[in-house]
Image (cartoon, rainbow, N blue to C red; front, side, top):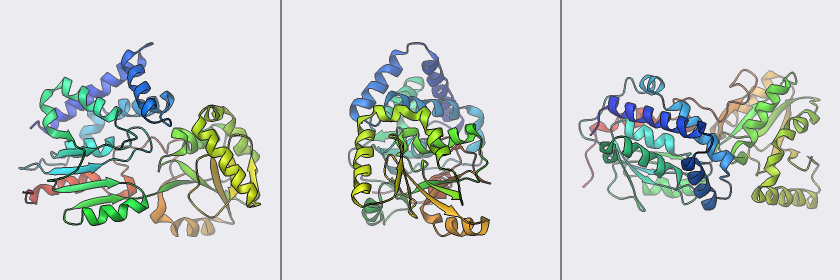
Length: 342
């Protein structure tokens, strides 16, 4: 098994490889991998896959990786960690993969059928850089013989996961979403950032904003104006079909919906909204706003705007911005005392 320093060195080189490929005027590697990802999943347009690759090209650097895992001690005997990866946005499970490898354990990876192109290719590139790292992961169709598990899915699938993985240490993740808090004084750049938070990856990620908290008398036309640069959304048939369907549904139900042929906005207390729809809710004062948020913390992945994360940064988390607020690396680093499965 490689040392932590050697793994960091490999990941740093992977980040450099991605940067090199993404900055080439015509990269055959980028063209091939983005085309394959799109053919598998019509939501994974080239722009969205590249956005994810660009994120990891910056995140995979020796300085940030070393700081992230500086206090992680490798176990004497690596444990096999079953990873059930989600497939809602490109490479969404890659953080779990590198967390497992960097904790000195072995990742048993079950990719989503919607996202089984890019992550295997990145790990293939890692193996080319250093063949020994291939001993730190394996791809499986079915998990068995694992010592711990990290599984991500819908709220329905979590019930199955909780039962199936009950005999081992586990992290089970269900549905979450993100919200934005506006005060009415946002600049054009900040509102453009808000739209990035809402519609990067077509709004399919748990870090995508699906609910806006607005001060009383907020001018909603500001949101519609900020959405104009995102007109490319309407070029995707899946997105358009969602827009048409939900618009028709709301009209049949005689709901007061605002729209601009690109996004639908409806006043709705729910945090979750379907693709192409933004829910909004007004707040009277800061105390009222804080109460609304606190009542829903178990459903919130990320908060942008106000005194929280900057607008436009929801889909650019740091390595230690853990999903559901559960420290994955700490969980993995404490597996050393467990007995291995038979």
